[in-house]
Image 1: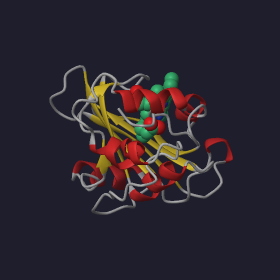
Image 2 (image 1 turned 135 degrees about the vertical axis):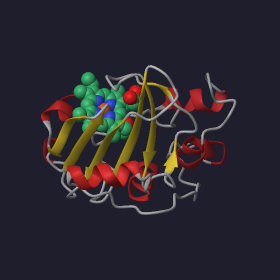
Image 3 (image 1 turned 180 degrees about the vertical axis):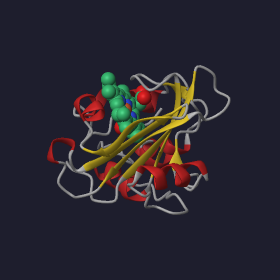
Image 4 (image 1 turned 120 degrees about the vertical axis):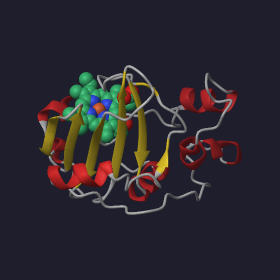
Amino acid sequence: MLAILVCGLAGCAGVGSLPSLEEAVGQDASADTDGAEGAGSDVLGTGPQAPPVVGAELRLWLESGEYSGWVAESATHQSTGPHFGFVRTFVNNVLLQSLRVGGPEHPEGAAAVKELYGSTEGDVVGYSVMVKIQSESAGGDGWYWYELYDGSTFADSAGNSTCTGCHASGADFFRSPIPFQ
Ligand code: HEC
């Protein structure tokens, strides 16, 4: 935690252009050095905050860009996980506010959408999504998991074991580094 915070304050690679997600979640640390992530920030996203948790409906919701007003990483970057090359993560306000306070379990309604670009940064070719469907995480069963890439669906269920094993090491299954890159 401290290393990440110091890294953020000192300016690591890519910090030159401040991502909006950093501003919203972490980079207010200059005014708030006690380690509470972005507790001083009041930046929130806009637009619909509750993605459908049925694959066919979610796909339409994603493809019409309903999440585009959410707080997001400022730019695409290479996934450090298995997420198909370049990615960009968006979080809704429920998750954003939970990440700010660093609670042990994100509340019901917390959601993240990750745009998947593949090997080039041109067009979005898929999405990875996680939505908290109950307050208890229950080993990942408390999250609905969805992934669509290049027309194929790789996950569309609560507690999907393709996703939960690796995500279990995150902050209540959330894996992106905080402050965000
Ligand atoms: C082998 C590890 C691994 C597996 C399996 C995995 N992920 Fe991830 N995921 C990551 C990592 C690492 C990140 C952090 C950002 C990055 O570098 O991609 C991430 C980020 C995400 C994010 C953005 C929010 C966050 O947690 O940071 C979503 C949404 C997501 N993954 C969904 C899924 C879904 C859905 C599946 C199953 C189909 C899945 N992931 C499988 C490692 C994994």
